[in-house]
Picture (cartoon, rainbow, N blue to C red):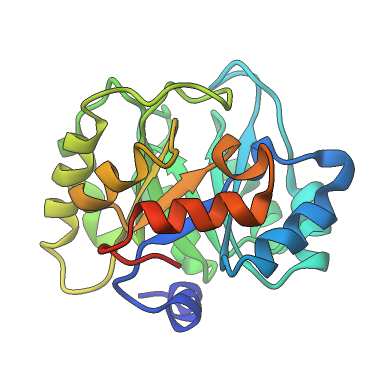
Length: 236
């Protein structure tokens, strides 16, 4: 367990299901206000999607924006790099205030070396899988992982519908994570709402990333509804 994951566990409690709002769906004209509403609702993690227009067909934020976000919040910043060459930019994202960095298994670069570098820089290391990829692809990286992120939509755009059967990948990822003698977060992102959240939580997800389901409408009420949807599993 790295220092940053230990920091997060102290905030939210090991074993609880984390509700991690995805800022991709926030109002960027009022980003500080949206973040403060997330804080007021009791969330402890923010999910930040970084896209380069090449690995996925969309462009989003970079280190400069993350640095600005860090200035207005102490929340754990979970940064998901959907970019072709994450190794080139690791230092910039770490210096900007990232607490955890997740890369994709599908990149052409050496995932082993990049994950090692992330951990050497003192932040949590994660790996993500697109919907068409099998969970056993990440087995070789287990000893380097703090987070496994399963995509339940094709990455690139928010507001998509949950791909049925993604809960089976969560269950498979949970079985892998349980093979190591330390905490590995099993996260899921894509089409998460009050209907799908309990399905993935019961399958073994410990971090539920939600964008539209949090930021469309009342942020506080939406987060409460997501928590209530996983009652009996535990949430934070």
